[in-house]
Each structure stands twice: as C-alpha cells, then as structure tokens.
Length: 97
Image 1 (cartoon, rainbow, N blue to C red):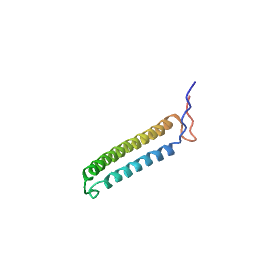
Image 2: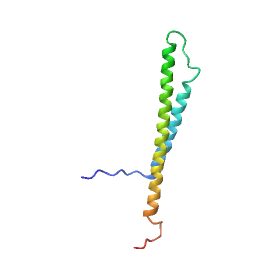
Image 3: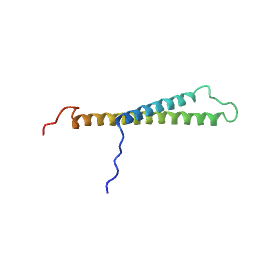
C-alpha cells in the first residue's frame, strides 16, 4: 500500500516560507523585549532575572529554528519550480521523443 501524496501548490509553499520567516522576526522581537528594563527588585530579583534570561535564550532559539525552516521550505519550493521546468515543456512547445 502506498502512502498518499502531499498536494501543495508552489505559491502556498512560498507563502509558508514567508510566514515562517515572519514568525522568526516576531520571536526575535519577543526576546529583545525581555532585555534591559525588565528588572525586578526585591527578593525575587535573582529568580526573575534567571527566568528572563531563559526566555530570551528560548526566543533566540525559536527565531533561529523558524528562520532555518523558512529558508529550507523556500529551497524546496525553488527545487520544485526547477524540476517542473525540466520535466514540463513550456506552454505551446512540444517535446521530441
């Protein structure tokens, strides 16, 4: 039994890549908002600083992964376009056999 094929138009794949890259920018922005100016005074200062540091690190990691995934998805779409160009003749042109 064969597994079902994934049918996804190339423009939608490029849209997914753009969305992933946009989400990476949002994650980066979230990390930067947890920087200086978010200090807490009092007995919770050390714990709050550690929490913010962890969240900044996490935001950076998520941003990096989303950026990488967006680039990878765009490369896949590019390869589909290249493959189609080599397999499918241009409109109105015949392929000699």
